[in-house]
Image (cartoon, rainbow, N blue to C red):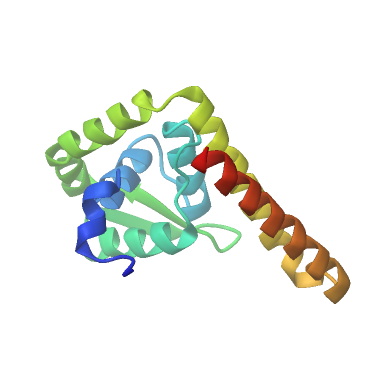
Length: 158
């Protein structure tokens, strides 16, 4: 079975170009650096969607290259982005995309949001352990994660 590809887009709630509109919406609240944009988007979507740095930073760069945002480096070396008039116009044109995404998020039952958050928290915990975990603990952690995955798969199949 082949994974990925254009056929999967119809099953995704986000579509090509949506990240640009979401990032601009976040920046329309106030100027922010990348991590703040990630946090703002997560709050916009009630925790259902929290973009990775690998989505946000290239999107910010694209928006800057297209002159939709401007940036400056503030004390501490962080690059802060601001939406400009061209960005506001782009956001206005993309309002239907934003409305579609926000409507989808509102329709997701609370229990499913909690499941998404729990999965994300599990992933963060596992990833944060990587730098200093011993081989023995890594084996134990892998066993626990594999058992959790199997139990979840069983539950879903019932």
